[in-house]
Structures are given as C-alpha cells and as structure tokens.
Length: 193
Figure (cartoon, rainbow, N blue to C red):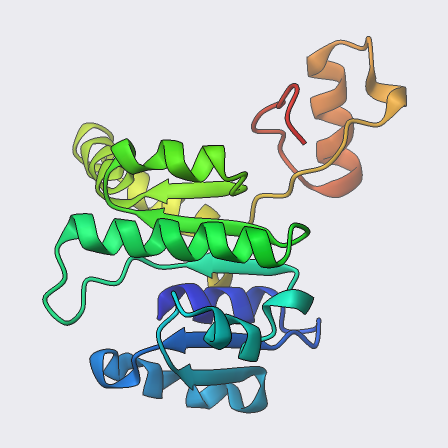
C-alpha cells in the first residue's frame, strides 16, 4: 500500500485520516498500515458498493484514490471497469471530492473524463515510460525517486503564478524563486486549475 504510506507521510502534520475500502483477505499488505494507528481506517468491503463508500465517509472526503484491484483472479478489463464504476459513483456522491483513479489501459480513460474524475494514472503506460527513461538515461531513477517519494525530502508543488511575475522574463522569475524559496520551477501549466 505504497500510495497510503506516501500520502500519510506527506500529510503527517495535517491530522488526516485515510479510509481504505478493500477486501482485506485479498490484500494482506493492509496489515502493514497498522503502524499509522488511528490515521488509517480499513473497511473490509467492496469499494464499488455505494453503502461501503458512504460508511467510508465519501460525502465528507476531500480526496479519493482508486487503485486497480486485480485480486481474486480479476482480468485487467474487469479491474478497470470496477475502478471506473467506483470513480463515477464517488463523483456522483460528492462532486467536491478530488478523485484520482488508477487504470491499466488508456482506452478506459474516456469514461473517467466524461464523469469529471479529476485525474488518472495509466499504470502500464506510465511504468513503461519510466522504464524506458531508466534505460536511456543512466541514474535518472534516483532523480525520479527523489522527486516522487515523499521520504526523500523533495516534492512537486503546484502554485498560482503571482501577478508580480506576469510579463517578466522566465530566467528572472526562476532566479527569484530559487533565491526566495530554494525551489526550482519545472513547468508552467496553462488553462487547467
């Protein structure tokens, strides 16, 4: 349950409780989360079940993460269908929740997009890209792990561009941000919030 561990480490000061809805028998690694004490609640239920989502507190949740569940001999197609069903259900139950879903094949992403699911990760696709970069660029995985793993200390931060930066040369803004915040600008995103 790397995603839960990373999330809890990143929010260690926030008093955040994570509720995991899963078939416990099929996921013995859930026992490893006991080290987080009362910051993790585990509901031994089917995450596609509306009543289970309601018991998990979906109406009050600020974030929801859906992991592809290939347990019990499920096919990849079935796992993606269950993920899409649960994501769309969560969005219907709480339109203010930020939902991110893991799917195995991009062909299922359009359902998530149509249902206003905020984000998704195409596991096989992203893993392949990372593996290709590891082969092409020796040592890149240490950099990727440093950026993506909370335990290493660095992280991505999305911030609005202050009006004082608008119209200025990128190099000037980059230097100022590095000096003021010891941060490096990686990208500027336009349009989407």
